Length: 502
Image 1: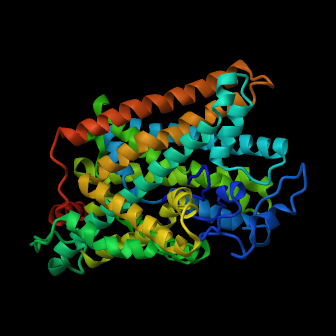
Image 2 (image 1 turned 90 degrees about the vertical axis):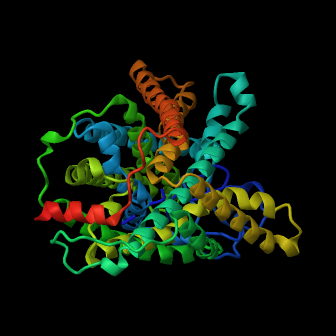
């Protein structure tokens, strides 16, 4: 089923999925965007804008708009990925009672903020006769409408700030994918000689030592570089379908395993030590940070007026999946839960195939997650290169960006800390801090009730506190771990899992 997630501000497309157009193409029509999501790559932006009627609410890509069901699938795909698999450990960091309740609260707040972004974007589309505005432009226009002269004079920084957080978030997702793929492939390879067809007997597994997980990351690098050379989103959508299928099958098998023989939860703490709660927050907001995708998804709908209903329906499904997998996974594996629940599955071919299937899905999703920062960064360099060299510069910049995510993953090979750090640093700003402030500055001239102001302030403060404390705790744990990282030894995972089934 389906991830990374998304976001853009100067020119972007959904974090984990589907279509959007580069707003940069509106600002600089001379630049030929290699990654066009138009029905026809040759169609110029000016042709699309020529049909826009003032006062109407219209989108790009009118000829190949998506149905409500396609939009719902894209929304699910964009929110369900590696962040989901890390939620059982997140629940451990919060407690078996506090964890699910906190996931519900964060989910409601995150979905509400998505709705605020859509509301403000529509406001500026109608007010400024724009066919489409993205996240960054919405923030910029909001600052321009602010009663503060200083904010109006520095409104362009709004787009730049959103662009920055989008890049950090999306490249952070890509780093997480490197670590996830390396950990799972390493575990499968090490246990290959001892993998059985019997998932119910407790057997001793003799592992075959292999190379370090960081060497697996380097081995994956050339294949991911080739993947991001695909610059057309319609081609990537084929891989997205493969990712959807493989990850959906994997999730079904994971649920099938964790619901069997659940232990008595009485030995699990209702509330974990508060020092680990910031790590929970970072992981949870990492999972829920799909706000960057909402405007591109709405933009591609045949009937965008139905998007709010699709948004709330889709995110309700996502929230239920998050809470159930996080709670059941922690109940099943207890204190031995690892950064990804796939690493706790037993050593039999059925569950080894789950790891491989999910890894295949994550591999293909890398291209979708990468599309967003590429849409922001690549045009900056390509538009400044001579025309004969533009394609070469495009591919070189993409290669450098993939290498950067690989290097960062090598430097921080702990999956749980990478997820928590990315979530705390950038996801909290995009998902919780900016949207409520955007509503305040957008509608300040029209007057906002005290309850609305209090609500917006509360959500923004929640996001900011999570940003500060979560980042600090993640960095502190990274620099000086309080405990040794959980082993990814598959024999331990198999023995524990098989023992529960006996």
